[in-house]
Amino acid sequence: MLQQTQASRVAELLPAFISAFPTINHLAAASNGDVILLWKGLGYNSRALRLRDAARAIAEHHGGVIPAQPDVLRSLPGVGAYTSAAIACFAYNAWTVVLDVNVRRVYSRWLRAQATTADVASEKELVDLAERVIPRDAPSTWHHAVMDLGATICTARRPKCSACPLSELCPSAGRMLEAVRNRRPEPLFRGEPRRLWRGRVVDVLRTAGTPGVTLFVLSGYVLGADATSEERQWLSELITALERDGLAARKGRRVTLAD
Picture 1 (cartoon, one colour):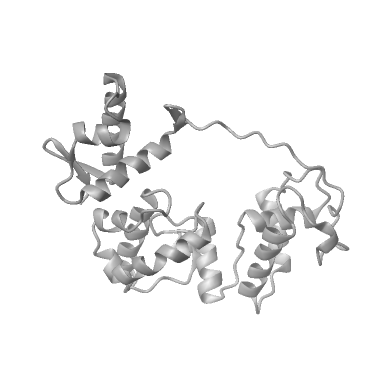
Picture 2: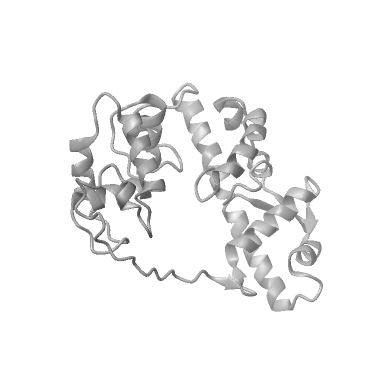
């Protein structure tokens, strides 16, 4: 839920999700539509399905208990290197290397003098450093501290080096130039990112409930009455993509959330 979603929004919406799915087994038994309905406001809907798929794997293969080993966690749907390490570290206090964007930044600047605020060391260098400095008896506390340092002091654009407790040990302190970042433009439709249109379609289907809506009605809600035939065809192709991703379904002439 916290991937590219504000923590305050997650805090607001999490209780309802936990109430609906109080255990791993409850979530494992949920349909696509069940979890998508409660994912409104939490970012990409496909994440909800990966979370449910992971719950099913945990229920089927691990007795409903989330594994503690990073390599086992990585075998779950939607769980990669960072998530597996973070779960093992923060849930079980396992000694492992957790590298998020804040930790990478702190380690990179601590490792050697960086020319700009955007420079980061290689993966191997960061892992080698981490394995030397992470305390064996307090990996969770250590990672919380480094993440907090990166989020509040050793920031991406204007680090507060004068306030940093590592400034005397950091070869990058006070020496980095602020980097100019060039972001890749997102694919657009009608001047807006296409991911927003996907979300709008799913929102209409959430409201429509089980009966769903016809493609004509859906087009009116999403594109407006003045949509061109090319735009309606684009919407139909978008729905096909949502079907492929397990988010929507066509039942005759009507479109609904996936079962």
